[in-house]
Length: 282
Image: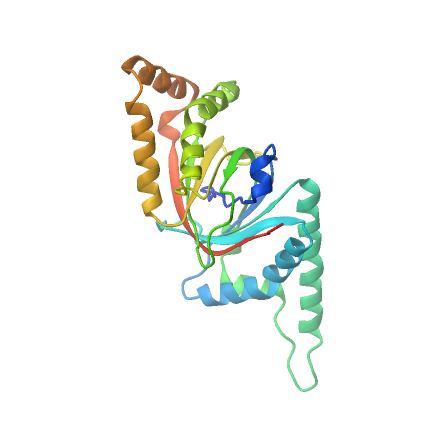
């Protein structure tokens, strides 16, 4: 799912937070999400798999300027048929996606070759795929490629040690209403998020869609990253305050705009906690 999401369902997150980026038009970057269902008791093995297989590739490509950020998230609420872990990376374009895929393929081939030719006196090791089959249910693995239409970032990444919480609000926009929905979102929601960025409540936010359409449950999602769960209370309070200061007629018009362009019953949400969160600094 990303449900999902995830996504994360997530993604996001989807992060390229720098002061320079704040001063320039925000690029519509791409975020690739992998959803995994890790078997009970295999969480540590999954972490070791990431450490030896994916992390070296993503860290190198981040140092090379290809990857803007990457991380791992776990859902706050468990679901019997849901994913237990999400890995994501953010790049500027499709070329970046290709470089990550090529890097992963080459690194896995190297690890498999090393496992097949162990040191003298040792038995051959497991291939990466054999390790994966032992750790997670590969039949439930799910990928998403997401593009941010709109995004806002704090002038600096989170303080050292901060592992953000991210909320994903999934929306199904009616056919032909995508432009109306985005226009309303930018007019009524973006200013609230920008104020929350300015006062430090929100670390980053975005309005995103699937770059490659694979999920029929939703068409758009809003993602909001905060440093702690209390940030979600402040986001809610800010939106209540924004709507309350408007006239009854304006509140009704805002409500009508969003409900007329979406399928309200299809709305879903997901909250995740980052266990790894890395951002490339300029």
